[in-house]
Length: 89
Image (tube, rainbow, N blue to C red; front, side, top):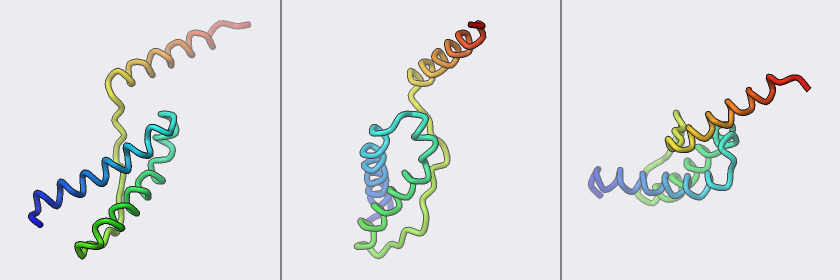
């Protein structure tokens, strides 16, 4: 297996686990549970890549980057929440 094909295969497994895990979570939970998501990726990679002689030692999720539309919507919600909370009842 060539290195380009290997990298492509690893990326496919990572994306599969992420596509399976992330849609089940609220966005805030994705940030809070990134270690659990990384562990699920690690377990899947270990299972699939051990057949090729690879040992997966650790996976890290360094950054979570939501879609630009999602970021804008989150910012609007945060601004709305701050505006509502600034009015005394």
